[in-house]
Length: 448
Ligand code: GLU
Image (tube, rainbow, N blue to C red; front, side, top):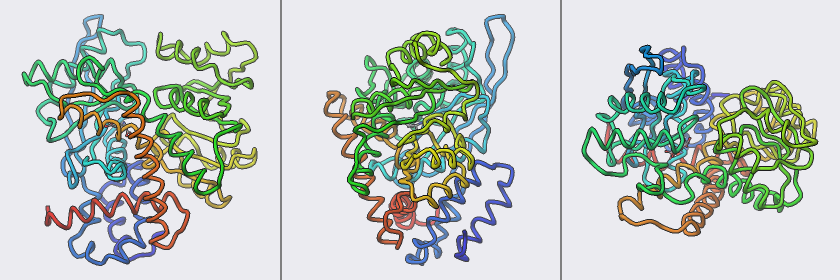
């Protein structure tokens, strides 16, 4: 509930201006609610309009992307880059290629990215971009032509000291390679302008694994500190089967848990014996197939149509790693009813506000996305450091830094939650801890 007058006024303005962007409103409302005790303690933020400025992107770029498909037909998509906040570093955040992409979706992601990047403790501002391009069923050559057309426009807005994009849904190593090649060709400049690059051309070891591994490091640390518990012997439900889900499964298994599900936009598989990750990797990373194939290949595994059913599978820990709003109130209630006591988010904003209310009412350990999934962008930050140094660290070095960053996020979130009178609240703590650093930088730099 919004009770603070300043916060209410700021939210009303966002509602008036951006009422047609439901995901953005949802992200803003959650953050503003958490920040009420912070602005009450720091009246200086209101004096220089920090919140009014925080909810307004510094720049929104929207552009046509025209390309030719394999039949010779011209296709037109929309491209976006939202440069949300550069108070603590160059804009940083991924690119998403998905038919659901629109300005509101990119704005919600960019807004979340501001506080997420701040939580990593690395110097990165917040940004996000993407397109409504659907790569499903497209040939490799079509994806390359699309990426080249997309970068032909985007390249004038980004740079290693300005804005550093990376991957998100449907943007992985292949797409980053094509995007990097086109940037280099047009600008004649070899720099760390993108992260998530291939290891041969400036990528960081452990970047591929970072979001999923980081999610498990965060969850393990939060469980250790708040519950004196661990992954050992737990049953885990994971949604998705992309980069985040695959490496979350890998790390959860390594930490002694049994992961029993995987899903995609068509449905989910339940494997009571524990997911065989090599099969999922072969399907998804090997030939970009559908998860249904898993049940055809692994005896004892079941496939069910419809991805929301995954939340009815009994578990101790749920790690949503697919997409926004994938857990609604009914799904959250099903999780609680079947014994789940921990929800940590690998995807961005996977829980609706009603689902979060269910977690809170039932005392679940809830790790919000901007903290729990910050490992991806954290290692992107480490990739930027390595590019600047012109050297590369070993897998073990990067992985150790990632683990330490995730543990620091838990500690910083809990410290902020305590400071603002909500001890143990990882959501309020993440929003407050991420915000204060950005807000102080905004105050110091004057009204911009
Ligand atoms: N797309 C990822 C995220 O949501 C990573 C962004 C990055 O590495 O810049 O945080």
